[in-house]
Image (tube, rainbow, N blue to C red; front, side, top):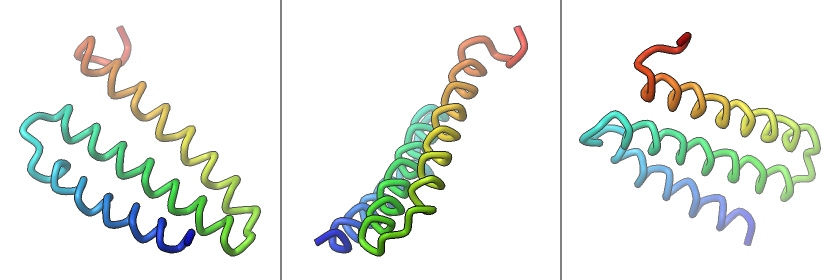
Length: 85
């Protein structure tokens, strides 16, 4: 069941990658890239739970924090036009 959900989220990531490549605006591309990152972290978490790999859970948490910080940096850049204002 968990592996089936992991495959489902991987297929969803492939569908969202269309928005990253063809997205009409840069915002659409960034949101698509963040969505792919979230889906892949969910897949890694499901694999960690299925195969009982505790270290992978820590890696997923660190990856999620980096995704959050990444989106904050992009939001600040697109709001002000520069990062250090």
